[in-house]
Length: 251
Ligand SMILES: NC(=O)C1=CN([C@@H]2O[C@H](COP(=O)(O)OP(=O)(O)OC[C@H]3O[C@@H](n4cnc5c(N)ncnc54)[C@H](OP(=O)(O)O)[C@@H]3O)[C@@H](O)[C@H]2O)C=CC1
Ligand SMILES: N[C@@H](C=O)C(=O)O
Image 1 (tube, rainbow, N blue to C red):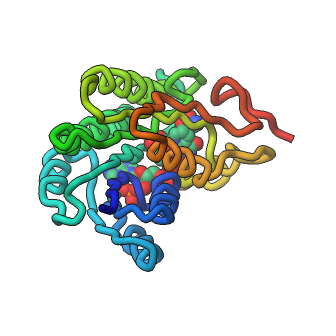
Image 2 (image 1 turned 90 degrees about the horizontal axis):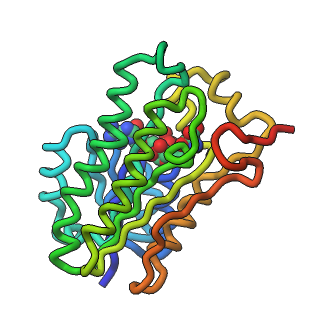
């Protein structure tokens, strides 16, 4: 039987790259995000490789998440892999100048969104004694940097939530992995700097960030190791970055 992956934040960046990588492996896909046109374009792109169900969803809406997951078409209803990838950073202001609404949006998306999706999908995995939750954390969850305040804290939540999920799932065959990428070039900086291209480009100038497919390859790897193996966490950075978001080599 074909395996099925549900990927949040599949309309760009890591999520779209995960969809492409898993389609190559023949997995059926449930792709979710808010921008339907992007999801439909990806569905069309992958149509000759696999079956794709598009689910337009705001992960901040817990009731919508649980209703959509409960109403998955039969062919996609048994989710083997949940990739909790939807997330964002907003702003780089120090805490005393930060916009409170930005903090709330990051908490609602990066923390509550992960909680809602996990809570909706996990019971089926436990009942089938089969499945894997892959969370996309960040090096920002372990390494502080100026302006990282609430974004880093949300990713620290993802790290500890992943560990505690593993503890809860002991005795089942359900796996949990937290992937912690460093700087990668996606729409992430466009979103963080609210469309200010110059600020966004400054992040990547003179260095070589990770690419979305680098993270997708890791997701595909952790999902396909033997069922007895749980990769707990993977911290991954560009060769031009060390330790945390601040230590970046620029030529
Ligand atoms: N790029 C980087 O340097 C790093 C990124 N990360 C993390 O990786 C993950 C993916 O980011 P990345 O691919 O880089 O960035 P992108 O901005 O390219 O992708 C973010 C994805 O999240 C989706 N998303 C955002 N908010 C919501 C929401 N409320 N409901 C549903 N979907 C939402 C977006 O879709 P849409 O707007 O259509 O809803 C989009 O598909 C995030 O969790 C991010 O924190 C971690 C480490 C490094
Ligand atoms: N590593 C990035 C995303 O998580 C960042 O914090 O800039």
